[in-house]
Every structure is written in C-alpha cells, then in structure tokens.
Image (cartoon, rainbow, N blue to C red):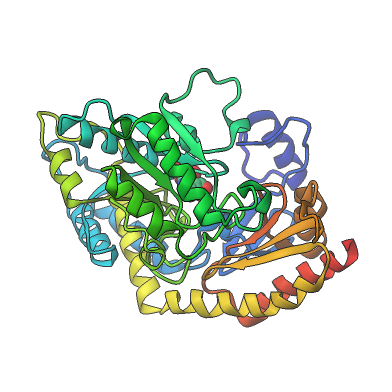
Length: 445
Ligand code: PLP
C-alpha cells in the first residue's frame, strides 16, 4: 500500500493496523501524527503545532529541523555511507568522533566503543565490567548493582538493570545477578525509614555488598541524575560516598549519561559535578541531538587495556558500530553545541524555567520542584503534607497539556511532570511552557 498522501485519519488507521508501539495498549486509539519539526516546534499531520517541552525523548538539544545537520549527513552519504569498524577496518569519521568525545569527557576516560543507542550501550558496559574482572582472574565478579526506578533501557541486559518490574513481565528469565537498591529520592521520605537519605542508601549499599559478597560484584550502574524516575537529583554527598564504598571493594562504577550527557545539565557530562568519578560512561540521545541513532560507551584506561587484550579483544559490537553518517552528524552536533554556546544556554534557560515555575510551588498539587540545567520536574501530589503521588497524571495533566494547550511534556514515574526542551528554547517559549502548566494546574488544584 502506498501511504504517501494519506489523510490524517487514514494515517491513524494505518498506524493502528500496522505498528506495534513501545508501551502502548491496544485500547488506546488516539495518535498524534507528527510530520515536521523546526526549532522547538513540532507540526502534526492535521496542521496542529506543538511546543516540544520534552525534546522528543530527552534529546533534540540543538532543536529540530536544522539544514546544516541535513547537509552534513547528505555530504557524508555521498562520500562514504557505510564501511565497517569490525576487526582491523576503520574510517576517518569514527576516529575523529572518538577523539572529539575524549576531548570533552572526564579526564580518566581513554577509549570509545560505539553503539546505536542507550540500551545497547548499557549492555556493552555490563559485559565490559564482567569481562574486566574475569580477565584479571576474578571469575566470580558477575553481580551488577542498580537502583529501583532506574531506567537503563529495555534490552535483556540494560532492561534488567532498569528497576521498573512491570516492563519485564512475561519475558522469561532476565539477566541473572542484578540487584536493586533504593533510589536517593529524598522527597519520598517513606523510603528511608526516618533516616537521612544518603546515610540510609550508603548503609544499604554496604549491607548488600556484604550479603552478595564483595568478591562476587562486578559493578554498580546508575544515572547521575535519574531521568525517567522523575528527575531525581541525588543529595549532594550521595555519589562521592557511593564511589568511596565501591572503590574500597574494587567494584566498578558505570554512569548512565544517556539523558544527562551532552549539555542536558549545563555541562558536557553530569558525573564530574556530582563527584561520581565513573569507570565507564554510557551515552546516546544528545550525542546526535536525535538526528540519527547513535551512542558511545567511554572506558577508563585500566578497563580499555583489559578489553583490548585476549584473542577476540572486546567481543561486543554490531553492524552499525561507528556508522559514518551517524559519526559525521554527531561531530556536527558537538560543533554546534560548542560554537553556539548551547551549554550556557541550557544553564541559563533552565534557570529561567525554574524562576518562572517557582511560584507554582504554592499550589497544593505541586509537592516539589527539581531542576538540573535544562531539565525541570514538578512532582504532583494530592496533598503536600501526606505527599501522596497524584494519580494518573499522564492523562489528567500530560495529555491535557498536549490536547488543550499544544504543549508537550513528559509525565514520568506516574506523577512527575518533566520538561527537557531543546537548548534553543526562547524566553517566549519558556514563558508559554510554564504559563500553560500553571493554568492547567490551577484548574485542577
Ligand atoms: N538510559 C537512560 C538513562 C535512558 O533514559 C534511556 C532511554 O530513555 C536509555 C538508557 C535507553 O536508551 P535507548 O532507548 O536509546 O536504548
């Protein structure tokens, strides 16, 4: 069937017939068909325009629809659309991008492995951590520590590290030897049995290490700031203390910077400012601002040295490792982020969003406002004293903002309204975003 020229309604019927969407029930028959994007605006097939407060899915750093990105992709396709990086083959764009990534990464990062996205990157990181210990003679170090509510993707590896059980149901045994700890979500004080959240988390970590046996644990994986869980910014001392415990037991630390990397928090990476000091960094999303699928895993030197050893080196990697067009687009994206001072913009406009949203804290539906660079979350509650999560905020707030105000935001973890717009968001657009949220929340409160 030729779909070109379908009317919006026919498009929706064709979608319902032909596509299996991630995380969508067959009962839901509504679709938003997006056909164009420019800057922070997405346009639907029926001509409706939306202000993209989500940056797609936590990306679109440089904004939608840039001609210079398209030109770089077209030029690269004409010169070399594909060549492999398996075995001893390589190409100029992969080498240039690896070098560029290491120039902006924390100083202890020394080598790069390319992927097509974040889940695949977390799989590679978990395999690398286990292999690192194995090749050094520590054959029992297979356990991976993660946190409840974490999102590390939906492959069998990354998906098991993801701490959202409902996403794993009915798919058989997942990755063995993954253990989840409490997330440092200070606002949810019921998680910490009346104790200080950091003290609670550190004690739980120490206890879990003893239960599993320190010599059985390969690594801990964590998002520096948890995104899908509702933008959980950890207490200031959390990562420094976690790192100390892990180092004492020779356990590696994997930072999943799929959301936080490439300027989302106002820096190239979020880990350094949080004193996380990871051994492995997983990136995706913002590396190309979403213009092409791509990810990269960065390794510290001791790990890189071990991964290069052995007959097969690192036996992980897929056909599209270091895809030349994706590499060219990532290089251009990084150039744009730098030349147009978009990390500064992420910091400044993020602060503006926070200032504009601050008065909403007086509404009884707003339990807490959290912000990190160009991300902002409003935790919605039925009552600020009991801190009971607002039920079904996705429908009551997220969908209404979209359908009645033309504003796209993400409702995460059931009750957190999360913004992660492109860094090119203007002052007018920031005002419109927060005004729309404020108007709706005042109606609901
Ligand atoms: N890690 C984090 C922190 C994420 O937020 C996501 C996706 O949202 C992933 C990993 C998975 O990335 P992908 O969907 O590209 O596989």
